[in-house]
Length: 224
Image 1 (tube, rainbow, N blue to C red):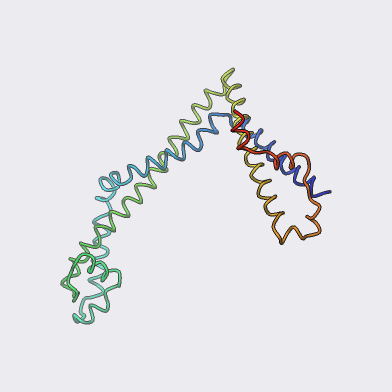
Image 2: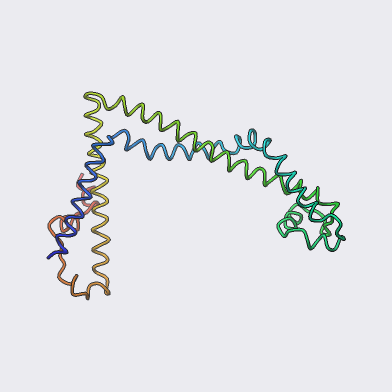
């Protein structure tokens, strides 16, 4: 049956690609990629607040505060107190409520609102910018380190061992991916909507598919 052969070919491709990527990338690069991602995000999250508040916030605080204040004053100049309240954006009125400022907001209280509102906004923006900057710089630094180390580990016997263990690791990951795929396919084929189909009714899979279906990771672990 063509469908049986199709799934076996898919599983073979997964295993072959796993071996190929393991050989070309090597063990070190395969392990370094996820570790680099975790370290970059972890370090960026840990240091973005002190970096942002100490270096970035002082640079952007004055421009942001002045811009908000000028915008608000321009919007409210010449308005009556009642009209001022309706013209102030909702977000500013929410800020006034949060920071316990007067409910009857007029032009005289704009500077107080802006001062109270701009502080958390500046802090949030500075932390976000710091996170992005740190993440980019760390990615560049880790890429250089990984390339340097990978170049050293690709020489001679160390390079052969690096590629050998890379193939083992990548084959293991490809094996797990192929096993999960067969379990999902088997689950779908057992569903009432598909099992009644004439195409899939006689499907039993090729030898590779049947091997993965019968394979049990739990049984393998308990065998040690």
